[in-house]
Image (cartoon, rainbow, N blue to C red; front, side):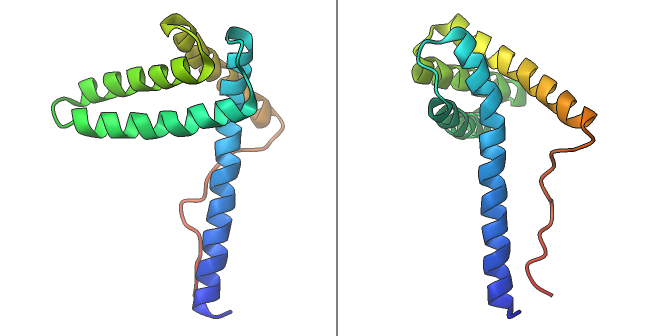
Length: 129
């Protein structure tokens, strides 16, 4: 297989894995939002997780220059603001969605673990030899 074809296959596999992981991390947010919010769909949950990660990374990167703790705290507040906006809830509702999502994620991971499976993202994709 020519090296450029290997790179394309590796990039396609990486893209598929990213999309699958995005869907998987959106499921707990969706379940949590169904408990708390009126406007809850898997699409909204996927938007919230994607935008939430971007907002967190930008805010944390900027404010971590001043203080790493400040960067994390403001980044998490940014995620709550995204949840608040996407799901049409207040600050406590957004916090409830975030906390429930973490609980649901732990439960999902425990079930997957009990089934003898694991969720891992390969750190290295062989692109060419």
